Amino acid sequence: MLDTVVVGAGPNGLTAAVELARRGFSVAVFEARDTVGGGARTEELTLPGFRHDPCSSAHPLGINSPAFRALPLERYGLEWLHPDLPMAHPFLDGTAAVLARSVAETAASFGPRDAGVYRRLVAPFLPKWDTLARDFMSLPLTALPRDPVTLARFGLVGLPPSTWLTSRFRDERARTLFAGLVAHVMAPLGGFATSAVGLIFALAAHARGWPVARGGSQSISDALVGYLRDLGGTVHTDYEVKRLDDLPPARAYVFDTSPTALARIAGFGSHYAGYRYGPGVFKIDYALDGPVPWTAPEARSAGTVQVGATSAEIGTALRAVSREGRAPDKPFLITVQPSVADPTRAPAGRQVFWAYGHVPSGWTGDLTDAVERQLERFAPGFRDRVLARATAGPPELATRNANYVGGDIACGAVSGLQILLRPKPSLFPYHTPHPAVFICSSATPPGPGVHGMSGHNAAKAVWRRLRQA
Image 1 (cartoon, helix red, strand yellow):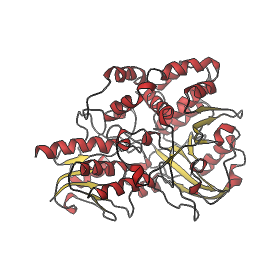
Image 2 (image 1 turned 90 degrees about the vertical axis):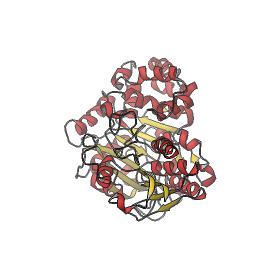
Image 3 (image 1 turned 180 degrees about the horizontal axis):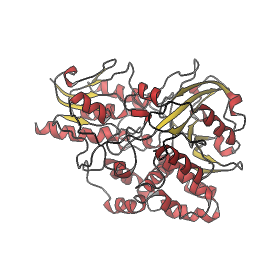
Image 4 (image 1 turned 45 degrees about the horizontal axis):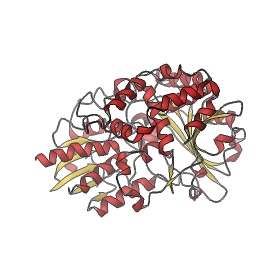
């Protein structure tokens, strides 16, 4: 009998498997698709030689993850590559605000009236970032806070809506960039704890940047698999699990799946019926014949570029999706240009690029024209650079990755109390109604992102049970 079976070979499932194997437990991973990776995959979606990441590309939470930093992933081929700028937010006048590694450079891009405000905002937390990240990403009761005072101080700043925090800025440049940071988790700007979302992304950039993985995000998954196999673990692909009886006998089962799928497989009935899924996304992967022709010079050297003219425009786009149930006319876009840092992604002189905008859950329309009209506002001539495109709306994303219910790449709405208490209000979110079954997906704290911390935290709950058995 195995000690542990893990269902789902995304970053969280693989991290959980590695953590358990490191402690001497026998582990087998079962993945429904023919390759591992979940939200960290790389595929030739458009033309030969163009290596695209179907989901995550830039990894501020990955390089800052306490779980990943504790593992020898570089030994297994993971190499972080940094663009000159982690992120830029261009404006219609050809200028841009930036999120740079330097706090001073970032603050200067906001203008003199807000530079001091921004420095005072991040100053209390940046020197203690590693401890804060560990405490924040390990909650709830998986580890006692190492610095409860800083964590509490962060809570006082982070728990209010982001609209409260951005009201401290006097000019639109800082407000718009920060609104874009919050929108990465598809949460309304006035939602609970959205200030924390923006701050986490900003602090992560200043601490270690927003890098890409050399060769593609698949490198992260492949490194985890390589280490797992050296520890004696096994990985089985093309193995769809429809019920627990499909799996070999084990002392514990860990699911890197949506709560909906877990309830169906394990027979938990309506246990997760109250779990909410969020908006979907419409994503376009591009093969380009050269760099994106951004008007703002800063955007040309940034790994990630946020596209939204003003904080009001971003807020309007988010409201259209979350409250009005329609696709926005001017979608807020998150774009990543991996080729800026990693020339291996495309043939010489060419580039890969992707953009996504938010749409209602399960939306079946085509956002391509709206996305490209928005890009043309900030990068005139963009369409002329397109060699090929691969589009994926909510149905296609859900087909590629079953955790993306309705196209929700966060595996659950990141709003309201569910931003912290997921998948159910509980001090033990990785536990389920069955004492031998656990959940470790992005539906558990600390939530979405390629960081492995949900798997790391769930593994702690598993090995505590195994030691007691």
